[in-house]
Length: 167
Length: 139
Image (tube, rainbow over all chains, first blue to last red):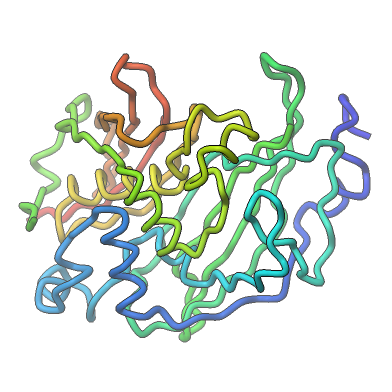
C-alpha cells in the first residue's frame, strides 16, 4: 500500500500495462478542420493544401494535438454516467484507487512525425507512472496515461502522457 | 493568418515571445466538446458544474493545451516543427474571460529552441505553466 493508502498494490502492479485494445481511426479532413476551427486555430497548413506543401508537408496536416481526439470512439447513450462521461467498458485491467474524482491535470506530448489527412492512426494506451502527492487539501494521486500513436507505415507519430489528478 | 517564417538566427536565449490573448465563448466550449466527442457536463451544464465544485462551466484543459500548441506553432512559423509540448492545468479557466499566453526562449541546442510558455489570467496568476521545444529552419 502507498504512503497515504490511495493506491492499492494491485494498481501499482499495473504500471506499464496495456489498458485497452489498440484503437485505429482514419484522420479525415472534415474532423481535423472542425477541431481546428473549434480551437480557433486557422493555420493555413490545416486548410490549404498548397500552403501545407509550401511548409514542407506531403499534404494537408492535422493540428498536432488532434491525433488524441481522432481515435475517440465514444459509447452508447445508455453508457453515460451522471457526469456525462462514459462508463469504461474496455476489457483491459481496471485502475482502482481509494479516491474517485479524477480531473484532467495536463499533458506531455512528443511529436515525432506530422499526421496527414488520410492517415490511419492506431493508439495504444498504457498506464504510466503513478505518484502519490501531498497537497494543500490533502493527499492526491497523479496518474499518467501514456498513449503511443502509430501511422499506417508503422511509424510512431506521437506519444502523449496524459496527467490525471485523483483525489 | 499566414505567419512569417521564424529562422534560427532570429532567436536568442532570453527572448520574450509576443503575448496572445484567448477568450472562449460558451458556444466555443460547446463546439470544442462536439469536435472532440466529449460529453463531460462540466463544459456545458452550469448546474452540474456546480455539483463538481466549479463556479461556472469550465474551459476544457485540452482546449487550453490546444491554444498553447497554436501559440507555439504560430510563433515557429509554417516550416517550424513543434517537437514537444507539455502543460499543467493548474487552475480552472472560465468562459468569457481573457487568458494571456506568454513565453520565453530558455535556450537553443542545434536547431532546437527550448521555450517556457504559460497562460495567465487577468490578475497575472499563472493558470497553465508549460514547456515546448521547436525545430526551426536556418534559412
